[in-house]
Amino acid sequence: MTLSSDSRLRFPLEEVGAQLLAYWQLTKPRIILLLLITTAAGMGLAAQGPLDLRLAIATLIGGGLAAAAANTLNCLYDRDIDAIMERTRWRPLPSGRIQPFEAWAFALSLAALSFILLDWQANQLAAGLALAGIVFYVVIYTHGLKRHSSQNIVIGGAAGAIPPLVGWAAVTGELAWPAWILFAIVCLWTPPHFWALALMIRDDYAAVKVPMLPVVVGNAATAQQILAYAGLLLPTTLALAWPLGAAGPFYSATALLLGLELLRRSRQLCQAPDSRPLARSLFKFSIFYLMLLCGAIAMDCLPGAPSLSQAIAAWPGF
Image (cartoon, rainbow, N blue to C red):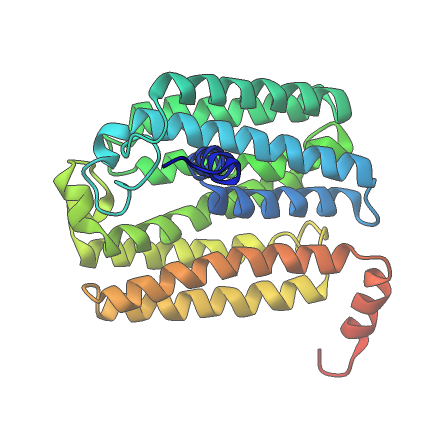
């Protein structure tokens, strides 16, 4: 019995497709999407109007390549604990679908392409910031903090806050206060986001001896810390509108409503810190929170937005 030519062709194609899918999963694409949204927010805030399409596309691709490189290197470093944790054992490296030397070559290629593209199409500052984000995430967070400090997310969150700086730098060639406020927003958003996840999978972290805050201080203290960071986040988001004046009333109203909702959910978690459904709800909301906040920045930067903001501000009782 022999296989038909169609069958012989189909099997190699299926194998190639499965391998491409494994490399795609290695980059953690869902995380990249969120990082690119903050990059776009940085570009929009810097431009305050229409963006150069070529620059925008190149910056998003370059930023995506940098994030993919950082995530791949993170998977390489953590493949030992990923093989133990239920949430991560399916990943390409612990499951054996990709070998470590292949992942190394892939990550370094992505990092090089990111730097070359951003340096060519944007500027050296944007390229350098993207490269610094990779180094910070891999060396400072993954190697230095993740397995050694309960404040790993607090300090390591700076790596995830670099994309809006890249976006701003790509447009302006420099950094200014609004860019740093965006940086601070992502830094302050990171602990509630990741600690909510850590509350959901505390046992997994404990099993691999990663000192995430719930493992070290317990659920109740972690929930209190989440509430504290949510409290700091609200005025920080509003600082983009006042005193900086970089965003308008639409953004301000959105930031206020989102911040109050984040505080409400955080207080609920404080009242029942062992509730996984509440932790899951907060975790999911935190993703939408950042997406909607960045979306509000984009809306304020659209052509015609200044006149719309002025009309809203002039509305009786606003």
